[in-house]
Length: 107
Image (cartoon, rainbow, N blue to C red; front, side):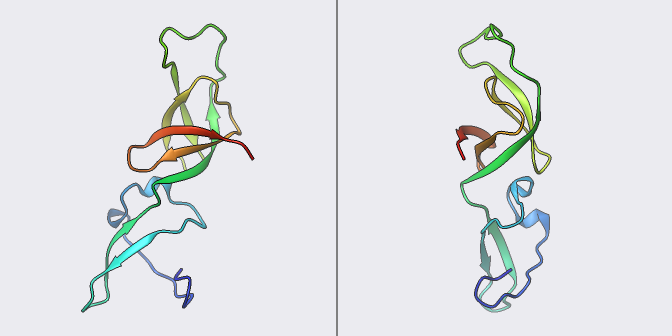
């Protein structure tokens, strides 16, 4: 939705780099063609905060390397690797450009 005119805008998922990070209320930048006024690209913010909907609990002593990671499913359905101390129900900051975990977010 355009924030000034409240016009609804439809985009093809192929125009969005990382559509799996798009959720309601996310502000994006859309680049339009000047003559035809058609959308060309859609850029997500560099970081988004998402809730972990599923991940296995971390087991104490399960750190075979200094960067022990485990898969976690986020609220939009994408699965990324997170550190073993991240639990289900927590909010994390994710880099939309690299699809990597950045940090845990405290409410």
